[in-house]
Length: 77
Image 1: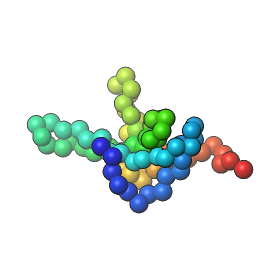
Image 2 (image 1 turned 180 degrees about the vertical axis):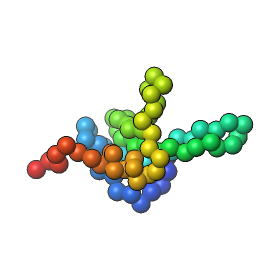
Image 3 (image 1 turned 60 degrees about the vertical axis):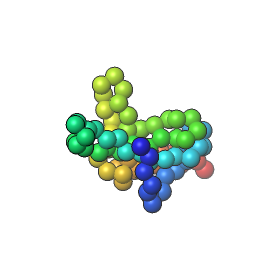
Image 4 (image 1 turned 90 degrees about the vertical axis):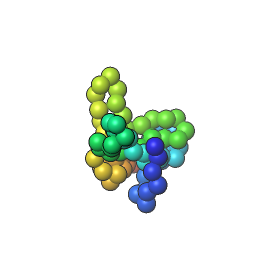
């Protein structure tokens, strides 16, 4: 599920596409157990905050997800 946020997200580092914050909900018997956040590119679908082969890389807050997405080794000149 995507969420609307006032957090500023940099464009995708791979394709320059628009990034979007999303929330992953875990629930059991219609009760939400937790919310975790991630960011995905709307063009090439690169994402952070995913579950791959049982390994999770989710973020506890929207700000943590945005900070991780916006982190760059070096900004372009």
